[in-house]
Image (cartoon, rainbow, N blue to C red; front, top):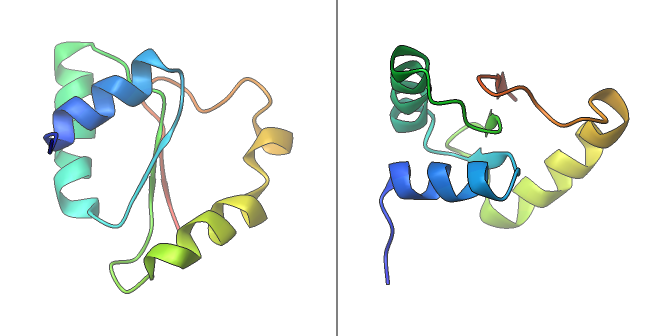
Length: 81
């Protein structure tokens, strides 16, 4: 089963997890829409499109978000890598 970008973002929010994506263009639009609708998500981390799938987990691990943001990202936070 394939889920839309919005469904993936909503699922991540329900699970209180940030979403990591290479699809910055679409998820940036969703982030703006979330602010407009006042429906917070749990953060979006945008990697460059050239990032390989196996590299994303390494990049996130290096960010050490748990130390920088022990409570997690804010409801409307977007981080660019």
